[in-house]
Amino acid sequence: MSADASLVARVERIVDATPIHDIHTHLYDPAFGSLLLWGIDDLLVYHYLVSEAFRHLDVGYDRFWSADKVTQAAWIWDALFVRHSPVSEACRGVLTALHMLGIEPRKGDLPSIRKWFAAQNAISHVDRVLALANVSTVCMTNSPFDDEERPGWEAGFDRDPRFVAALRIDPLLLSWPSATNQLRAQGYGVTPGRTTANASEVRRFLSDWTRRIDSRYCMVSLPPDFAYPADTDAAWLIDHAVLPHAREHGQGFALMMGVKRAVNPALKLAGDGVGRSDLVALQNLCAANPDNRFLATCLSRENQHELVVLARKFRNLHPFGCWWFTNTPQLVAEITSMRLELLGTSFTPQHSDARVLDQLLYKWSHARRIVARCLADRHADLAASGWESTDGEIARDARELLGGSCAAFLAGG
Ligand code: HDL
Ligand code: ZN
Image (cartoon, rainbow, N blue to C red; front, side, top):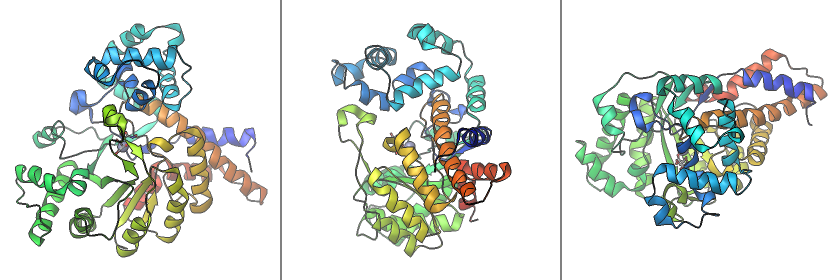
């Protein structure tokens, strides 16, 4: 049942007032300096817009990639905002972010927008964006395999408590033989084999980095053909290192399932695609490891209903987010309604996946609108059954959906 305008407004007000714990982003603690991206050029060269712009650009891949960021941004602005209406979700997002910052792009041009950002101080801009987006914590994606990021952690720095960490381990699980070279370089005596000695060294690596960054969970993105159990390095490492580590440290293991890396390598970060995953792997993981807690999101629309039903079968599975290609208004509404109707509030509807600080403004204002509408519809149905919800109950729902359920799940609640 669709809620009436007054109930929608009431739920929107409550959802807007609820601070968000963003459980997955690619943002960095400001101490990482230039790794934390912000400003109009980074907004425009976001890989979502790069792939959309190439559908209009007569610039070749090589010429685009050899140009500087300002030039790339100007090409993207011209292709997607000037020569065509910016109706895609990623284009609209740029305009929402600018609008929330008080910048009206219709009244200015790209240089004047660039000038506004250039006049901002990085730290106060972080404060401004987090306050405007009403985001209280941002979970980063932290990889010991990233040569740019690792030195910062090894040197140590004063943490901004609003930026919490998550340990990203894709190379370990998906490219084990080559990952052993990087682990050996970091002082872990591993070989490419599947041995008990290797398993304990990998656990030492995971423990060291968990403590170093105080990570909330371990995360991996997986291809559509990921199988478990299986005679693969990934399955062996999950069984002999990652899951025992997670139990020892009371940590969740987050799976992002269904990404096809480098479908078009010429697009670089924009070149990844999607495939339907066989969720029997997730079913087997949850069934065989009842003492482990799994966060999971699927990239394929076709996997969403099966993921929700699996979460009804396994209390150690917490679905989260409308990831990447499912982060569109139509699919967020479809998936969030499905989850509310089958799981109540025991899931996390969205993460921003923000790569650029200012994206928090649009990713969350767009998500809040839809989550509020879906939640209002549920409360309209309750009212139709004689159950009038109080503001306090709706506020509890909002806290749970905007980070609280995930925090309770990860804490073992
Ligand atoms: O693997 C991931 O965490 C994905 O989110 C990728 O980083 C992807 O490039 C992305 O940013 N999607 O939103
Ligand atoms: Zn991501």
